[in-house]
Image (cartoon, rainbow, N blue to C red; front, side, top):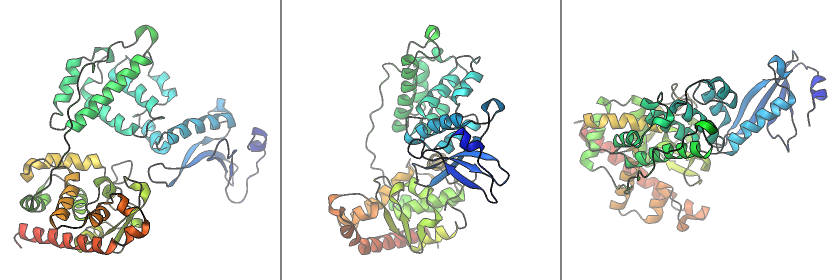
Length: 409
């Protein structure tokens, strides 16, 4: 265990070296001593999203009154960051958001104390609290900032039930998102009421979401017909989607994978004719091997040299974001002359084709990485690899044929 006396007497060496604090009490908290004697605190942890080790610099050791971090300060920061990680969040991503002013820290609250108690201030306070405890805090933050954008400068207590209905009316054609938005705003106001925000003598007393019912969510069964697939394949190059967004949609169609899995695909996961997804990145937590047809391989060949296959310099994650692809697709539907569909409907279209071809259920489950009792054992799963590969190749040939005929070649 480190102590201030031990730290003060640590000598520099020819190369930098690290010393951990008490591993049992403060796992991941470390101090790096540079060759020039500079001592820097950092937190090393595994990202809950992908299991990768992340190093987050906390600050330089010294007296806190000089703007540096004492041992007690560093442990306090570790406690805060570790709470975020334990809640399923990524502390480094959270700190980046805070630095950009999108999420405030406890100290930041003092700086905005004089700010009127607007919706913006309520969103900041609420997101800062739930970030520690909820895995999907960043999704909640994004929904609140986007859907409440026009009300950000409105006093939070002045938002009415009519305002909430107006927000939800714009989402009539997206019942799931409408319900998520209603749930996020309702939860935020419930939190404000429960915690007497912003103060005991000036707290919000009424939730504007009171007595507003959620939409009935009907299970989607949308698939694209052969004619629609031809229209899509022919129209994509002329759509509002970027080349990368077009490719990720085509790859989703060709593999039947989930759009989130495709967006976050890493180059190291691709092995010639196979894409090997680790269990940490699949919905059911089970690893999944996808056999790549020639058209799928051709797409990957266009995306080489970066950590993520579908790399992006405009996102914090450094890869395409699902919501960005979905938004671009929605905006392109009118030009494509297609009825509304989502990226997930491309996966459903592949599944429907498997049914039409009377592919056995066990192979169907193998293709879509559905976990059934029939596939519980590893050796049982492996026995379906060969027919699954044949199905992926046949589907790839079918899509390639549609693409040729849709372009008139």
